[in-house]
Length: 459
Image 1 (cartoon, one colour):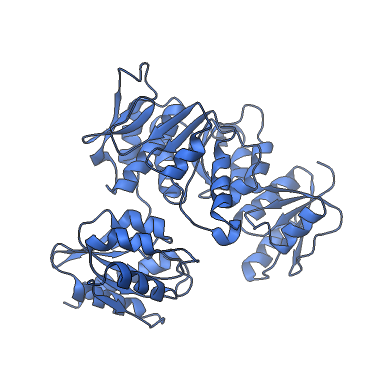
Image 2: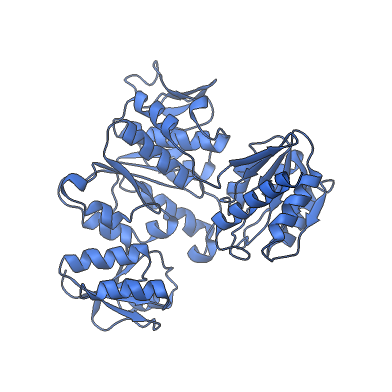
């Protein structure tokens, strides 16, 4: 492409875009707001390739004919300036799709409010078990633009692509072999502007997909799939013809079989799914459906699920002390994710709080109330959760931890242990982001684990 390409941001994806385009002989300038040590080092490496980096200013460089964004919102000053000037704005994922060589690896793509990373890693494990040269890319793992430009022995033959609503917003021509929507619940409304716009961004994954895979138990995902005739639902119930689902303790396929009306094929057992929780079974079914759409046998599904290693901080069992289990679900950074975790245990001391990003927690608390033994709240928006608990679970004891220093989690865990009784689960599932107190959700989960182990050592 002639002209000048502007890349928005020097993150992992932005740097990869600049490197790939420079290697193709294109003129590239990068705009980056933060001039830190990492950014300066990346800029130096790009300079050796002939790429200019401009720090600080968010002005659109003169002569730009295309702007590549790695997830910046439409209202960002640089993006808005490009749109006003009639400059084409595309995402890194869209650019990667356009740059695929002839005979490129097919994409199996998925999105959802929650469960994306778990499902895409399950899918990758299934693909590898089936003998595919596959990788998880996109919103996880390697940037897509690097994956699609691999050549020779390093090239993949199938890509498992996790896509966020941000990435899908800036992608207009993706045509995956199969695509899945795991679930849709309010999130990132400050970026998209409304729930309708957020859901529409998720739905873009279906527009050119060969096979549409949707959560038949999720009304919004079901609605997004309605216009597409080649749609396969996954459900935690007994599957109908054309669906994959659960029969007693089996994951069963009634979609990718010769006679979906009369026949079914066992894919795996519930014991093959780790950690075993309803939302994780749904993730496994979605991954299985995508793999089956790509021609993988049932044996690969079973082996792939058995080989899968769950990510840290997602229903991760930390310790058992005094007949009480301590579980780290710090990755639950919104109410929808926390609801999935809270539905997985019968009697819970809930550790919650953080940055709710404007999300409503009333429905979450109302549904969880019968399972709650107690609650310990921390973080910026703990008061919002406390108010919801007062409305919907007035008999549940609540401890408010106002401290935000590095030792606050020790106090949180001590109070949770005091509330817990034998058979309870102390569950860190915050329903909010972590940056009010921690460097990220992993740091929050690690602080929880340290506090639990410290509690154990002290007794």
